[in-house]
Image 1 (cartoon, rainbow, N blue to C red):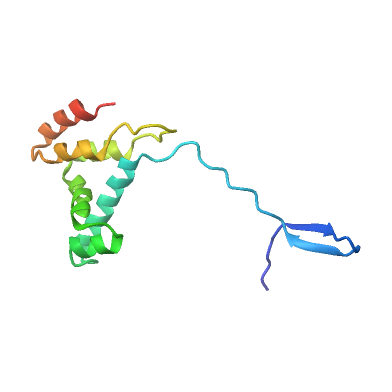
Image 2 (cartoon, rainbow, N blue to C red; image 1 turned 120 degrees about the vertical axis):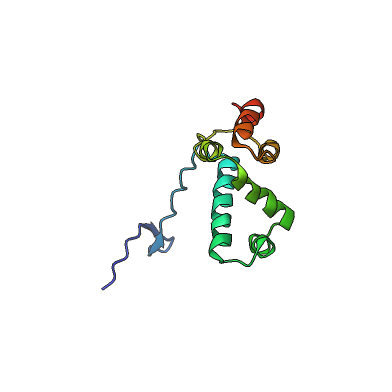
Amino acid sequence: MITVHQKLSLTKTHRGRTRVEPRPEEEPVKPTSSVPRISRLMALAIKYQGMLDRGEVAGITELARLCRVTQPRMTQILNLNLLSPSIQEHLLLLPPHSSGKQAIHEKKLRAVCAHTDWAAQQSHFLRCCSS
């Protein structure tokens, strides 16, 4: 036996009949803040790298095609994995923002990713992206 719970609205028509209709759903409450874009990109970079490592996709080109982005853009996203673990953690744990401009932009992080030394990354990150 299946039980379905749904709120109904009963209205009288002009001829005296009762009309039963589903009650219009209340609009969901929209959150006043959202996850920062760079946090979402960092999480996607980790997920995509895992897909590549497990062999779920043949390569970056196939991954880009599946995600409907260009191959260079996919490379930019995956390059976030080159950041030091402390920077990655910082990006993932950024607090939600309510509106306005983001504190950290992915474009600024590209220069940080270019450093191979994590200490150099950390100092460059503090100079260009500290909030």
